[in-house]
Amino acid sequence: MTFILLTGAGFSYNWGGPLASDIFSALLADKDLDNPTRDRLFDSGGNFEQVLADLQVSTDPADQKRHEALMTSVAGLFNGMNNTFMHVRFEFEDPPSVQHSVAAFLSRFHAIFTLNQDALLEQHYNPHIGPPMNWARMNTPGMRFMPPFQPTGARQDKFAVMEPHPPFTNFGTGAQPYVKLHGSVNWVESNQGKRILIMGGQKAVSIGLYPILQWYHDEFRKMLTRPSARLMVIGYSFSDSHINDAIVDGIHAGLKLFVIDPFALKALQNDARISKAKSALIGYSNRPLKETFGGDRYSHNQVSQFFT
Image 1 (cartoon, rainbow, N blue to C red):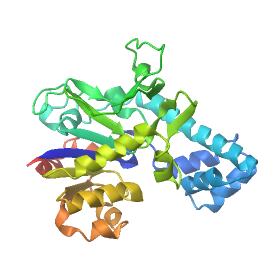
Image 2 (cartoon, rainbow, N blue to C red):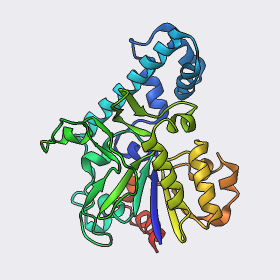
Image 3 (tube, one colour):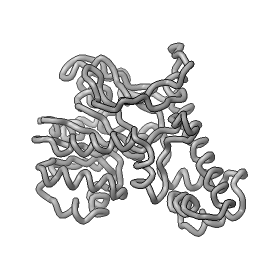
Image 4 (cartoon, one colour):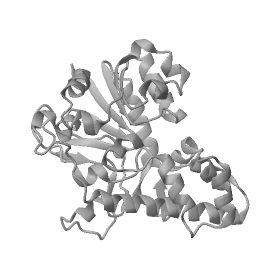
C-alpha cells in the first residue's frame, strides 16, 4: 500500500496555528492596510482569500498595490507564526512513547503533502526514528536555500529563504518527501523576486505560473491514483476544487480515504463528488490530534487502523 498524508490549516491549529478566521481578524487589525482594503475585508464576511483574488485580477493600479500590501500582511502573519512555533512542544505526551508519538505517526507515510505555508514540521519533525520506513530525513523536493546562505544549525535556518532548484524529475529515495502544494512563506522565485505563496480564488491559475508547484500537483495526482493508495486528510475543509479534482481522480482509481477533523463529515459535504463516494471513506475521527496523541488511546487506536 501507499500511505499518503494531506494536511490543512486544522493540522497546525493543534500547535496554536491560526485558522482562516484568525487570519481574517488579524488582517483587520493591520494599520498598514488602507481603508478601501479594510472595507473589502469587512464586506467579504471573513473571506480574505476572495478579497485577495478580486484585487489580483483588478486592472486598477491602486488595487494591484493593495494586493501586494495584503499579501505582505499575510506573509508577516506567517512569519510571526513560525517564530511562535519555535517555542512550542511538538509532542503532546511528556515523555512520549515511540508508539504514541506524533513523529512516529508521521514517519509511516510515504509522502506528506500540505496546503499550509508555515514551517511547523520543518522546525520540529525528524522522521529518523526507525521502522517502518527508516527515513534518513525529511526533504522538500526541488527546493534549496537561496545562495549564498549556509545553514548554521539554528532553528531559524528551518525557515530561511528558499528557491526552486530544477530539474524537477522525481522525489528521490531515502528522504521522506514533504510537499508544500501552495508554496511557503519563505519561498521566492529568485529570477522574479516573487513570493511562491498561493492564496486567493485563482489558486489553480496561480499554481500554473510556477513549475515547481505544477510538478508537485502532478506528482500528488499520480500518487493518489496508485494501486492500493490510501489518503489521510487532516484539517482540510475540502474547499479547493483543484485539490478535490485530484482526490476524485484517485477515488476513481480505488483510493481509500480517512479524515481527521472536528467536523469531518461536514467537510466532506463541501464536494458532492467526494461525499457521494461512500465506499472510498474507510474511517474518520473528529477528535483533535493533541488528544489523539496526548493520551487518548481509543482515538489513537482508531487512527492507527488506517495503516492496517
